[in-house]
Each structure stands twice: as C-alpha cells, then as structure tokens.
Length: 265
Image (tube, rainbow, N blue to C red; front, side, top):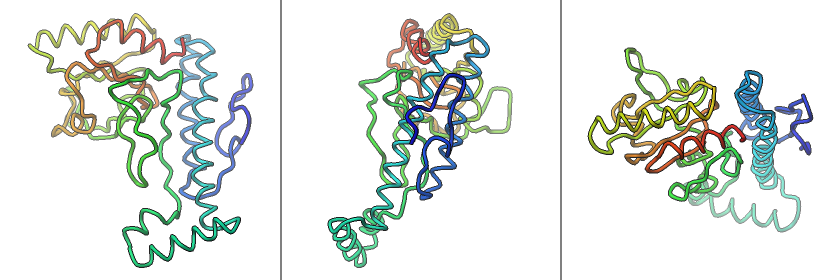
C-alpha cells in the first residue's frame, strides 16, 4: 500500500494505491469508491465551493479503506494458506468443527467477505454522534447500521410530482442533502423548522443543498424504519451518499457547523 494517496495534483486510486488479494472483488469495488470519493471533492474545489484542504481528506478516507481491505483479504489468505503451525492448527480445528455444523461453518470459515462500502467514522469531515455510535465492522454479509460516516442505506423513495420510484442514493448526488425527520409537533412548526435548517445549510456553502422531509419521500415507511429516524433529527448526506452528520433536535447552528465540517473547514 502506498504511503500517500494524494501528492499535489495527483490522486491515486484503485490498484495504483493498494494491491489486495482478489477475495470479494475488493480491489475493483474499492477503486470505484475511490473515484466516487475523489469526484465530489474535485468538483467542489474546482467550482469554488470548498478549499484545497477538502482534497487532502481523500487520502485519509480512502487510505483507511485500503487498510481495511488489506486486513480482511489478508485474514482470508492466512486462513486458506496458513503461514505457521498456529495458523494451520486453527484452520484444522475450524474446519473439523464446521463439518458437523453448517451454521458454525457460515460464521467461522473465512472464505472471504464480499466488498462492502467503507465507513468514514474517523474522518474529519464526519460529525460524531453520541446517540448514534458506530457499531464496528458488521457481521459477514450484513450492512452497517446507519450512523455518521456510514453510507446511506439504499431504499426506494418517491419524489414530489413524479410517479416512478427512485433509489435513495440516486437522488443525493447533487450537492448536499438534508433528510429531516418531521413529526415534532404541528405541521406549521415542522415547516418553519425545515426552512430554518435549509437556510442555515445554504449560508454555510454555495453548493446545492436539497432539503427533503423523510415522510414526503418515504414508501411504505421503509426509509423511516431503516434509519430508525427520531422526530427532530436532521441527516446531512454527502454527494457520495455517506452520512456526514445525524443531528438530534437539530438547530440551524448545528446544521451550519456540520456542513462546514463536511467541507473540511
């Protein structure tokens, strides 16, 4: 793995940065995520919406993702091709026990994990949240629970004035998105609150900001249930569909601070 994924005007991506074993197609898929991460940051800097410091975060976020991929694929390799007596003994014991218990086999035999989106929990662009802490690497085949730094769950949503459903990640690509959990009280109060948060976000950035009440785009309560959204929460989403912040009892100043942080300011 390289020491730096940014060197001046050069951003390294895909196999030019880490070289990983092919388990789970992590090399190809992480290259796509590298490109997504770089694309929105380059666009923001080129358009004057963010300073050059935003590009420096490309290394921090994607180098951590590369180390995660190396850790996962190296563990699989050590299981498949043990390098010492202790690893050989562990492999033999695991396979012997798993032969009599298919459920145990699914949990313990390291045949590789499919590629999964990395979580930018420790990124300086992510606003941490004590009420939604990161639960750690998820169980094999399971998604991360929604939290700051984690990619937004992709569920069908509807847009006002359109009959065909869309995917949630599809509609958050243009600038920042604020997903609002209304239901704080009277409808008029929710409307005033939403407008105040939208105005606060717009004062923090010249980039587009789309404000969407969760109830207005939800289909069969799927989004609300997936996010376990609490009335009064504001979810700030980056253009690469990662959650930048989850703000409980969100106030305009909270939104302004979260947007500025997501811009690397």
